[in-house]
Amino acid sequence: MAARITVTLHELVAELDIYADAVLRERHGVSYNLFEFLATLAELGPIDITGLARCLRVTKAAVSKRVPALVADGWITTESGGGRRIVLSLTPRGADLVESAGGELETEFTDMLADPRLDPAVSPAAIDRERLNRHLATLTAIVIEKGHPA
Image 1 (cartoon, rainbow, N blue to C red):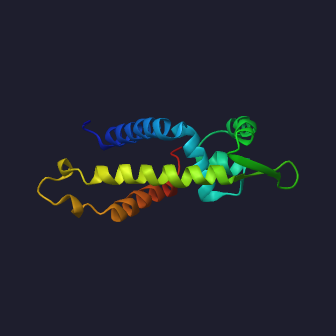
Image 2 (cartoon, rainbow, N blue to C red; image 1 turned 120 degrees about the vertical axis):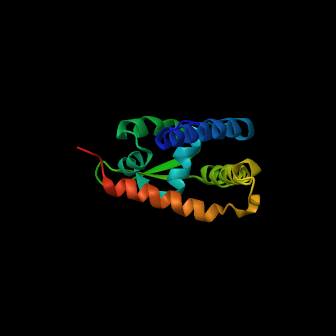
């Protein structure tokens, strides 16, 4: 564990991503990168390429480059959104993956919160997943509100 919370948080997120990637590859034959793309689309879709790129924190070109292969593989569909705008939606195949794999990852991560090493003086059930999630979402919102330093 690092001495600074900023480093510890980055280490945690990186390790969770690596773990999720291994689970998804083993059980579903897909990468975490693909899952994140589809899960974000499931939360926000239908959405245009620009909006999805912003949510994924990548360039519009990065999303555009992936679209043809994802359409060909049956994960997403595209339709004209007027002008040059392209709107993306999940296919039933994509929605099924997000639902099943997302549920599995949720269970895996929730089970980690029950590990007695987190607080041996307290029952593992004392770690409230919903409360933790609310705190993390609030912290995310606070960081977004602060904006980027000049």
